[in-house]
Length: 313
Image (cartoon, rainbow, N blue to C red; front, side, top):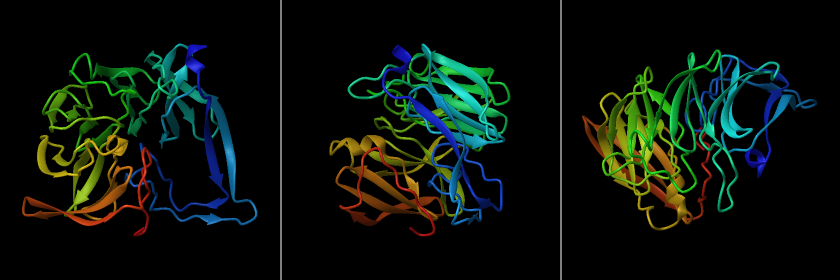
């Protein structure tokens, strides 16, 4: 059957035997701090029992990761003839609701069928982006659609070869995705209440990158990479605060999947090519931003792989 050509995925909840100091959410791609780590938890793990599976559920194919918050596990996958969003109860694994995004995105050139982006759970809303370009908001309680817009049909975005991948983020009441439309519209901000376009900026090509929230001088801003540049953006008005030519374009497929890794205030690691990576330092000098290369490493490299940062490492 078309929808299940390729792989069959599994949603699993793993339980660490012991206790945690807080109920930690994982609201979207790469977690609450966009660095692949959870900071505010203390785990006491039994050497005898260790990590156990609380529950698991088989789902259709796709590349979407999971978002976990407010008793929900949400992910996207193939369901029959359509790509879908499913929500599961974190305790029991029961599927609570399912939303049809649209027709299945069929894999090609070695890729599998299904959605690629990871949804965002924020309060009582789920935000997601289908591989064909449908951006949408759902009620987290029942999966009913609140609004939707289409990046290609409504905003002239160019669909990447393997489909839309960017994972939405929410900052200062602006929903941000990497748009990849005509010149000057690499990154876009939408109103999370109704899906209206608020701003679109940046001259660069977009493929499989996702934006993050970065902290510079103690203040949050959007940090987003294109194939050739890294941007710092004021989410409130879409103003480009700084940009840096990361020299990834044309060197390898690596630049097409850059997700900046925050590594302290104003520091960002980028794996911008198959043959190397860079650590950057961004400093705010009273609104005049300075970007410097702290180090470059030819051994630390990867494609479609984004490192985690934890405790200075």
